[in-house]
Length: 104
Image (cartoon, rainbow, N blue to C red):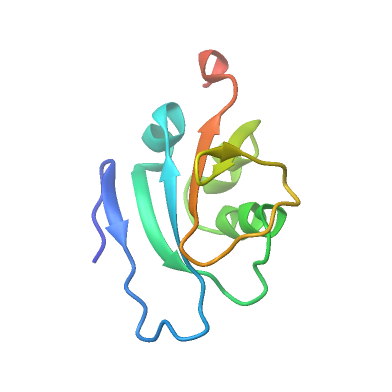
């Protein structure tokens, strides 16, 4: 199921066994720019950390690469983390732009 205009997108995997399913929340200007407030996705096996996740998300069409190239505040389960932080099953990852006042 997919919806536009700051709606929630849920991707339901066919099988969850051995997979990591996460929720990503997009805040404020980032949500507006991407047209998405949240999504639930199954991570590919090679996405082990935030530093793998961000470039993977940047491969999406539209404004994803430009938007995620900005300085981001990243948290996992409501704790601010560094890029090396690993991602576990059922993690909630939040992404927000660090300096929203200077967004074009």
